[in-house]
Length: 404
Ligand code: HEM
Image 1 (cartoon, rainbow, N blue to C red):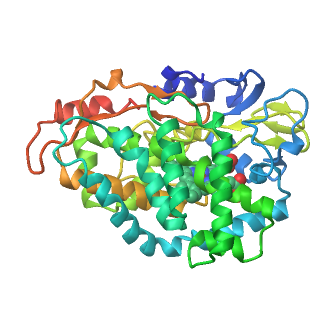
Image 2 (cartoon, rainbow, N blue to C red):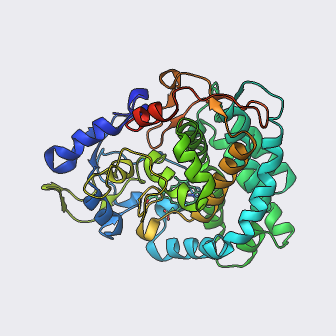
Image 3 (tube, rainbow, N blue to C red):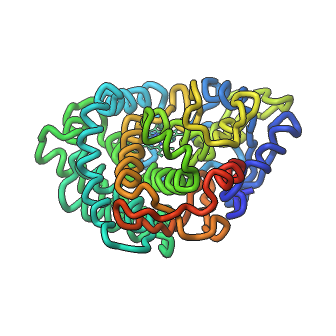
């Protein structure tokens, strides 16, 4: 279930997995070892809150899948004891708290503008290549306060690993990620300024290893999934004029939550290892085996969401699990929403008739194990104010509702 076809349209497969065998299945992961896949929303939700399911690889036993192995100390989030993990998270939560949303939103909007402006007068462009890949590096470099050298290297890393034609996968570039992480920490120590990273590095709450894990997480771990969310959102809105209207006239940050639910760019939570035997969906899972909680399946479970395979930006309330839930829930949420809303707003305000030029079926999807998104997204912005007809209109919008 981890191939390109699945990434493009996982919903029918996930629906049958939810219906069968208590919604819990023994699956083979792409690297080979087996894992338990949990697909029903109620189970996924319960498991995310169950502290008998540890994210710490120390509790993994035998030959079961352990996830993408990152060398110490970059693996701080997978190996810290609960108290240390809570300390790691506390520092970050204080810095990335939703109360800063107003502050972030204005700055993020300023940072997005030059990238969008550069699309002016270009007819056919790949949105992934020109916007989704470079933009997170630009925004993060500024908001976190990266030194120039690290900004340039982060951008170069993203461009060499995240583009559609990129040769190395992110997991094959650990040396370069380690180098950038060290530059950032050295800079933070040498020049304590008022940046987010300098505060985290110099406030003395975190050990050297924890800082390495934290910076690694902040710069690299979520990068690809943000590209997936941005590209998936542009594809979804460019084909659905009514939803685009709702986005432009309504609460744009809330609309991002529905896009997150609908697209579920991060399909799986990080692996969990039960510290004791646990029963889920009628199966007893022995301690130490790997459990994969399928957030995408939970977000499309009809037991939890009405018309789950439809994108409906006026849906409310939107209590999805695309950013996780509970003690490991995403700390970057306060960044994800304004970045996505800002890109969509600037793009579609300037080019209301922007459309994806490829036939939807010709778009290839990244078949990453944990996440999904268009690998490349050819768009034609048109000239500002120029009316480029969207083929199909409302009728095709309806027919698209069951597609990714
Ligand atoms: C589209 C963008 C993103 C998505 C879909 C996403 C999704 C998630 C999910 C599902 C989790 C929970 C993982 C689990 O329970 O195993 C998570 C955790 C986390 N995310 Fe994000 N994330 C995104 C962007 C970001 C950004 C921009 C940052 C920070 C700059 C970030 C930082 C974190 C951190 C620190 C954790 C906590 C890990 C832990 O405590 O184990 N994320 N994210």
